[in-house]
Length: 111
Figure 1: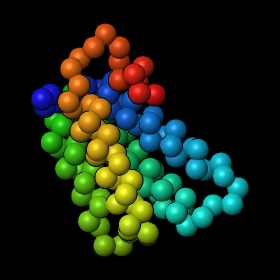
Figure 2 (figure 1 turned 180 degrees about the vertical axis):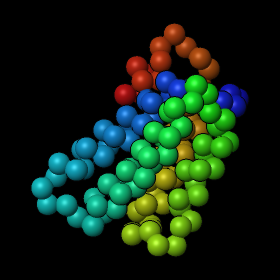
Figure 3 (figure 1 turned 90 degrees about the vertical axis):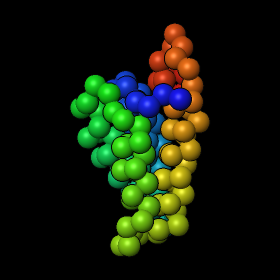
């Protein structure tokens, strides 16, 4: 298991959230679920933007920071927000941490 996430992988995760965010942001008639997902993606993008300044990030630290958002009491639509956090954590566990390094970057493989 890899214990650190490279800067390029953090940026790929950021842009994954960004693309999911923009897909929802351009819907004219948004539901409450769409608004909650937009808020969750914006929150995740802030965390990932912060970590993207570092050349390498400890995976445990990043995962801990992301999972703490799921426990905040004043979240709008906590169920949907938690869903997005769990999806992101699952993606990181399955697609970033447990993959051996290949010739292609994370962005090329999963974007």
